[in-house]
Amino acid sequence: MKYVLVTGGVVSGLGKGVTASSIGVLLKACGLRVTSIKIDPYLNTDAGTMSPFEHGEVFVLDDGGEVDLDLGNYERFLDIKLTRDNNITTGKIYQHVIAKERKGDYLGNTVQVVPHITDAIQKWIERVAMIPVDGEEGSADVCVIELGGTIGDIESAPFIEALGQFSYRVGAGNFCLVHVSLVPVLNVVGEQKTKPTQHSVRGLRGLGLTPDILACRSTKALEDNVKEKLAQFCHVPLEYIFTLYDVPNIWHIPLLLKDQKAHLAISKVLNLASIVKEPSLVEWTSRAELCDNLHVPVRIAVVGKYTGLSDAYLSVLKALLHASVACRKKLVVDWVPACDLEKETEKENPDAYKAAWKLLKGVDGVLVPGGFGDRGVEGKILAAKYARENKIPFLGICLGMQIAVIEFARSVLCLQDANSTEFKPDTKHPCIIFMPEGSRTHMGGTMRLGSRKSFFNVKDSKSAKLYGNKNFVDERHRHRYEVNPDMVERLEKAGLSFAAKDESGKRMEIIELPSHPFFIGAQFHPEFKSRPGKASPLFLGLIAASCRELETVLNPASAHQNVISNGTKNVFVNGASKKATNGLADDVRYNNGFCNGLYTR
Image 1 (cartoon, one colour):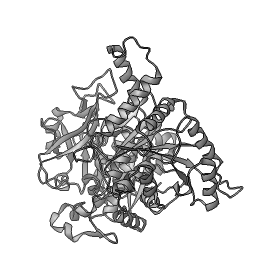
Image 2 (cartoon, one colour; image 1 turned 45 degrees about the horizontal axis):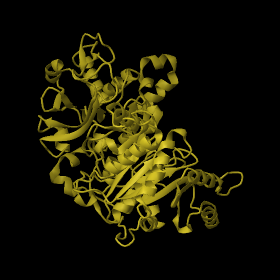
Image 3 (spheres, helix red, strand yellow; image 1 turned 90 degrees about the vertical axis):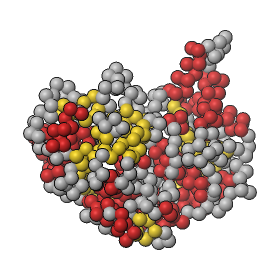
C-alpha cells in the first residue's frame, strides 16, 4: 500500500480537500485504484451533532456514518463508496483507546498519548486503507489521507506525531507528503510572497514531517523566481512545486495538476514510475469546457435555514450543478432565507421580506432542503404553498418533504392546526411524528441513517420514471421524524400521492402531486449519491421541469434524441450514457477566488 498525505499551512480553507481529491483522480486516471481517509482533529466522535454553521453540511454514507463533508468530495471525485471509518476523529481514537483500557487490554501499563494514541491512529489508517471502496475485490493501490486543520494546531499534535512515525515505519517509497500552502500577493507590493509558506514548511519539518511536494495556492501561476526561492528555502525540488491558481471552473483543478506533471512527481516519490500510465482526462477536459460555455440560465431558489453559509448545503449545490450541466443550463442559485418569507419578518424587517419574496417569485424552480428545528419552518411552508399553487417545479428533501405534507394538509384538507410534533408536540393534527425507534435522550447516531430501500407502489409516477421504472431504489437517509401513517389515507383521498414507501409499506418515502407539473418530496437525501455524469434522478427532474424539458427526461424513447455534445464525448441528459460516468473534480470549498461552477445570489 502506498500513502499520500495532504496537509495544509498558513490559513484554513485553502482547499486541501480539493487537492486530495484531485490527486486521487489523477492517480486513478493513471490506472491505480485509490481510496481516501479524512482526519478531523476535533473531539466529536463524528460530525452528526455539529451545526452546519460550525463545520458545513453533515455528509451521510451508505453505512449510516455521519461524516465530514470532504468525504462527499472524495466520493464525487472518485466515484467510490466510503465507510464511517474513513473519517478519523480525535473522539473516535480516544473512545477506542479508553474502551480497550477499560477492557484490560493495557493491564499494568500507563496509557499515554505516545505510544497508545499514536499507535491506535496508525493501526486505524492501515486497517481502513485495506477496505475496498470501488466495488472491486482487494485493497486499493494508493490511500490519499487528508489531515484537517492547519499545521501548528494544538488538537492535531497527536496525529502529526503518529503520521511522522507512520512515514518512518512504512518506509521511503511508500509515503508522499503534499503540503498545501498559500502564496499571497500583497496589493501594495504587487508581488507573490513566499515567507508564509517558508514558515509553514519550517513548522512542519520541526514537527517531524518533511514535505515531498508543495501545492501552492495563489491568484495566478507562480513566477519562476518565486518557485526557485521556495525550492531553495523549503528544500523541495523545483519540479515538485506546483501552483493551484484561480480558475473559472473547479473541474479544472485535476487538469492543472496533470499539466504540471504532478502525477510524475508523486509516482517517483512512491516508486510507481515504472507502472503508471499517462493519465487520460479527456472527459474531465470536455466537461470542464462544457461548464465554462453554458450561458442559458436556470434559476433555482434554495429556501433554507442556513442560507448564509453555502457549505451547509454543499451536496445539494453539487447535485443541482450535475443536473444543470446534464441539461446544458447555467445554474443560478438564489438563496432565500426561510425566515424572511414569514409574516413576522414583514412587520420587523419589511425590506428583507420584500426581497425574499421577489427572489422566490423570479425563479424557475424551488428546492427546500433538509434541516432541524422550528426556525424558518413557516417560511418553508409558504414556499411550498407558492410553488404548489403557481405550478412552479418543487423538490422537497427530508424536512422539505415533511413541510410539503403539512402545507397540503392545511390548505387542501383545511386542517389549520396541522403540524409536526417536532415543532408543536400538542398539535391536534400531527402530520409528521417522531419515529418509534428513535431516541429522545441521545442525539448522536440515533436517527434513521444510511442507505435504505424505497419501493415504488405507483408505477406511472414521475419519480418512478426518473429512476428508470425500477421496483426500488437505494438512497441515503438522515431523519428521526416521519409522515404519520394514520394521516396517509386522508391525504391520498385529497390528491397527494405517496409514490414510494419502505419495505414495510408504512413509512412514506416519496410524495407527488400528479396534477402538478413537478411537485415531489423525498424523505431520503438524493443529493448524497449524485455524481458528475450521473446526476441524481430527482434533481435532474427538477432542473428539466424548470427548463420545461421534463417530458424529454421522462420518456426513454426520446432520450437518445437529446444528446449533449461536450466536444469529444456525448452525455445523455438522463445520465444513461455509459461513456460519461467517470467522476469529476467537484467541490466549492476552494476559497480565495476559485469559482465553483455556478452563480449564487
